[in-house]
Image (cartoon, rainbow, N blue to C red; front, side, top):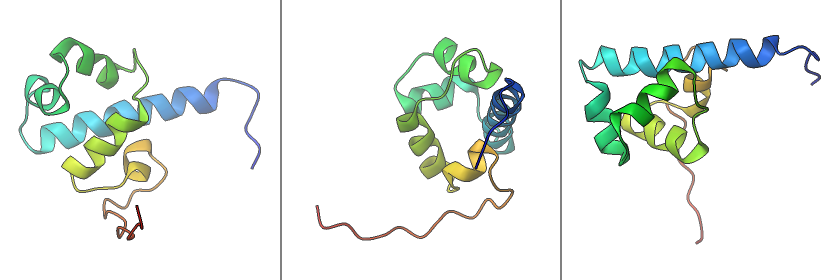
Length: 92
């Protein structure tokens, strides 16, 4: 898969990510402070994810997907299906 040289793809992705995490939070009538507390961070730090000011780290994406019972792909805008993926067993 090739991506365009312009930043359009990245901008569209960031917009979709922050809209998705905000919508998921608001759908459950939660505040930024409540989600930030669950993530072990400040409300200000979390709000920067919703505004697109900061990228959402992978470990935060995973926590949000688990918390909202959805997939990282849904949060990232790669699918419109909120259904989480089946977990695979690991031999760790």
